[in-house]
Amino acid sequence: MRWIDKLERRLGRYGIPNLMNIILVGQLIAWVIVMVINQNFYYAITLNRTSLMSGQIWRVVTFLFVPPLSTGIQLLLTLYFRWWGDFRFMMYILVGMVGALAACLITGSAGASSIFLSLFFAYAWMWPEQQVLLFFILPIKMKWMGIAAAAMWVLEFLT
Image 1 (cartoon, one colour):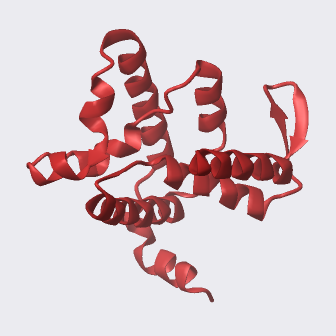
Image 2: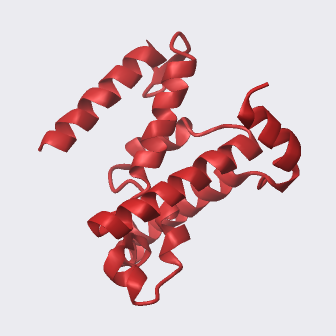
């Protein structure tokens, strides 16, 4: 039995039910606030070392709610791929949060986009032949979506 299975059997009751839904609704609300009400709200919930060291501890959690600042279509596509079981997803997010906090303390800032992008890559790795409807019309396999996302990530990293 793998270590994650043992951990889930022992601590599974502590998994946060519907954590993905909570994050999705939080991102949707944050996106609406940023796009419609106040653009500065985005900077109030991001994770950066200066604000963290000045006592704004809430940023350790609220950075998960930072929405992708793009069109509504990209937000819907991003939200479309984020589903997993309660305990394993909570552990995944928790490990990602610890990694983001460490990266923030080392580099000065960090975000949740890498956590969610790696979740997308994990989905593409585990189910490469799964077909999804790109833009709700075009059928495409997950392996090609993962390759395209990796190429865009590398391009963004290089620029």
